[in-house]
Image (cartoon, helix red, strand yellow):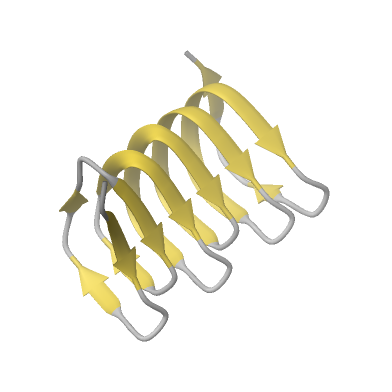
Length: 101
């Protein structure tokens, strides 16, 4: 299965919906929907994210609705989050409401 990749030199404004995985190393202003979504360390998303799993090493602001969320040591989430399971590493930052499904 292919992967949608937003490279570090890209800035996207608009919604992205994919049946496959999405990796963001650049900037997205809009909503993301996909299977496994990874926000890499230099990536940022300003909008809503929905998917099966979300892995955050970069910055997310907006809203997240996901089954499995991982916020790693460099990740920063400023969003209201609805999740089934959540994992955080030391150094991860979450500012928002957390709600378990």
